[in-house]
Length: 250
Ligand SMILES: NC(=O)c1ccc[n+]([C@@H]2O[C@H](COP(=O)([O-])OP(=O)(O)OC[C@H]3O[C@@H](n4cnc5c(N)ncnc54)[C@H](O)[C@@H]3O)[C@@H](O)[C@H]2O)c1
Image (cartoon, rainbow, N blue to C red; front, side, top):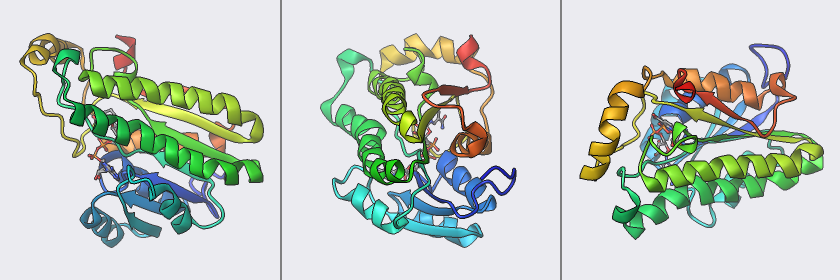
């Protein structure tokens, strides 16, 4: 896994959110470097487009990762050896400040962005520990670094992703399994982020106009995710890597 350009030969890697944006770019990068990828997404049409358009060993699996049975279905599709897991799937909120949160948005955002990530990570860990190697990369957000990048549900979920990442790294790095996160700034994808709150618009609008760096291409996130998945990052675990055009430095 160390030969740059062929780092994932003979590796099986699971990617969630594989049908669009950062997840899709990650699949493209990994198969180009020799991986067999289990590509997971809620939307079967996006997976069909992916397998039509991208050459390489891709096993598509249309499943809602919040379903309790999803993790075992994904593991079954992957087979006995899972070398890597990229937890990419995620959804935004409607920029709701705390007093305006509805339970449905809170529950869904936490279920997709956090609980599903925990369940799938929990499912792959025993095999990785048994073989003494594995790499897990979680997609966080600039909203995991500050309180001024999204609504409260999304911000809460992405801060929790950082804690989940660090705790997982703490417990499993000695057993050969690394766990890291990337924290993107704005990226050109299909993610929906409707402003549902007037107060949030007033409060965040001026910040967004002045502080946000240029919108990145999904490939710019995929390269960082692939690096963390690879043995090139063999001494990196428990880190949250800002891949945000410098936003975290502001
Ligand atoms: N785009 C950005 O500006 C940005 C910034 C920071 C963080 N992120 C994070 O990047 C990750 C990827 O987002 P993206 O921007 O590529 O979005 P995207 O909407 O383009 O892609 C996300 C994919 O995840 C899938 N998905 C959503 N819910 C799912 C579920 N329950 N089960 C299975 N699949 C599901 C969607 O169908 C979609 O294809 C997310 O975790 C997001 O929070 C994105």
